[in-house]
Every structure is written in structure tokens, then in C-alpha cells.
Length: 204
Image (tube, rainbow, N blue to C red; front, side, top):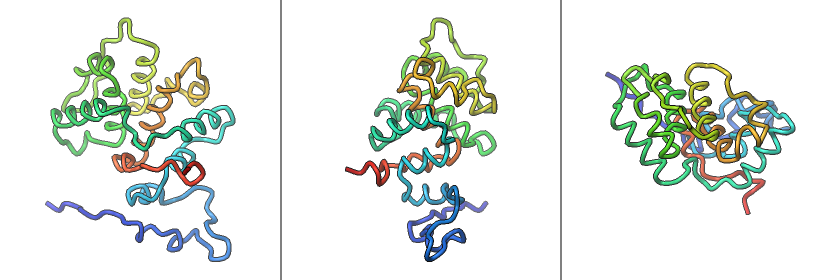
């Protein structure tokens, strides 16, 4: 069995090496075609990752801009969040077909606080996540939004829409932060956890 241990470095993903880079103009691409590789190399800030991933809709952009401004340097809510997800990963082991980016993104949401984790711990199994086993009775609107977003990521449904994300009355600020972060994980994999900086505009 061959195990790929290659990891991109900042030198590998220099913009000057890209086919979309023109010497006198700089980058000519509307969106970076190599964002995943640049995230893995650790050269992408939170601002670029978020704005490259989400549509530039005015109301949503206002919320995303605030999210970026207050980015704490980590996708985790706190140490307990990280420990819960690491524990669940250890319990479930590794299964190549199951362990997709979407699977880890959903796990990130379902381990984000103790209450939602207790309600969904039985959903994790060797084949993936069985959302029907969740205990949702009397759950908070916050956790219900996280649950539906996790299911959307795994099942390719749209219970939580972009319009919902733009509405603070529907998706509270902390839920928005978690859903945005989970979307980055679903799109770019576990390398998204390497995003530390906010981005040049907010480096102060």
C-alpha cells in the first residue's frame, strides 16, 4: 500500500508560478483555482478562504465581514470542542470511504458544544452519520440550526440556505461562525484547521 505523505509548502504554491498570473497584471483569475493547495501550505488567511467560498451577496457579506474581523485564529470554539471531535475520531477509527471532507465538517458541527454532542453521539457509525438517531426534542434553535447544517453537508440538502445565513434572527452569530467554518472544512478538508491569520486587511 502506498501512503502519500506529500505536503504543499509556501514555495510550491507561489502565485508567480500559477498559469493565471501575468507578470505586469498579477493574478487574472476571478477566483483562486488552487485555494485548497494554498490552504494546505498555510499561506491563506481566513478572509480569503471565506470570501472565495461564499457568494458576494450584500447582506451575507456584511455578516461575513464582521466574522472575519473577529476571527480568533482558530476554527475551534474552545479546547473542549477540539477534544470532543478528536475523541469521536478516535472512537470511530479510520474508514477511507466514509471519512470525506463532508463527514468531518458535520462532525465539527455536532461536537461544537456538549448539548448537541450528547444529542447526536449515537448518530456516528461505521458507515457515516445516521441523522435519524439524533434526539432533537426541546433542542435550542442554535443547536437545531447546527444539526440541519451538518445534515445538509452530508446529504447535499439545503435546509439551511444562504438567505438563512444572512438573517441574524434565523442563524445567530455563533451558529454562523460554526457553519462557515464547517463549510470551509467540507470544501478544503482538514487542512482548513491550519488557517490561523485573519488576512492582510485585518492584521493589526
